[in-house]
Length: 365
Image (cartoon, rainbow, N blue to C red; front, side, top):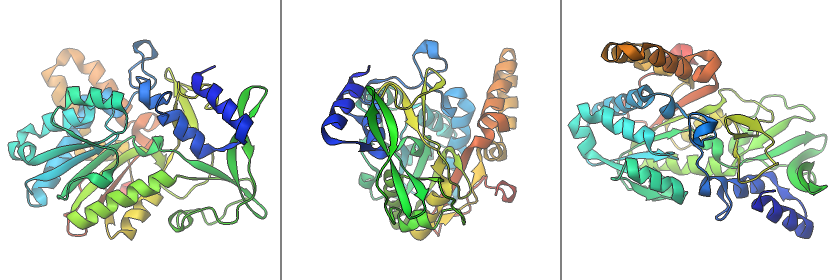
């Protein structure tokens, strides 16, 4: 039994069930026992200590293409200097390191960029400082500098805590976590009539049936509101990449991963990564409510191909002919529909005076 599980069992015995959102927050960010506070989450296989792999770790091509996208946008927006280059949840810093390396073809871009990371984990901050020592760190995007800002967020929103509600005939039952036989289990709470924000209500499916699960994420909404307000005030854009749905949807997407495999999310809190699918229509709605423009939500595969993924793979193969199989495997992992290509979505939002965002093709809608 993990230390956090023992603590939660004792708290539930004393005070009653806890909301799913509180369980997820504790499991991920408890100062002493939270997953991101002490675990090494990233790794290519379970033998190297990691629990999952993200696109920047799959291939350098991901960061290179995002770097080129950012540099191109910076040029077309008038080359502001200085400007804020911010990343939400930068992992080990791999993506930003690749972005800055790729952008070296435009020395003025790198010189003008003030790199800012939004990260709460001290352990991850240490890893990021090793790869990107020039960065400045923040707990939230609310403290980003008052500059034109380009924001990148890759697999950030999926790790923010969610609350689930189950549709009943007379309202909504919040999903709780309680104890049974010395284990943590799910339970339904007392009926609530209107638990959702106006933004989420605007993004629900037209029909929600009895028993359907709706997931809300207060921290997702707040973080997106803050980021959108910052861009609306100071100018710029955000590129958000994560796994989730591109149309209004219901359903239970709460899951846990450990050692590159799915596990019971309640079994070992603090030792497994907990995530939920991102509601991309909600993110777009919040951005548009703040006065930003939102590009059509794209699949990651189509977006990367529009930026030149296949061409970059060919270039790397010519430079390293002995790595052809590896490079094509990486391209496949990033873009194939059965891999990251379809599950992962891309949302671009921008200040109304920004030029058109590249890579978002009409057929990606």
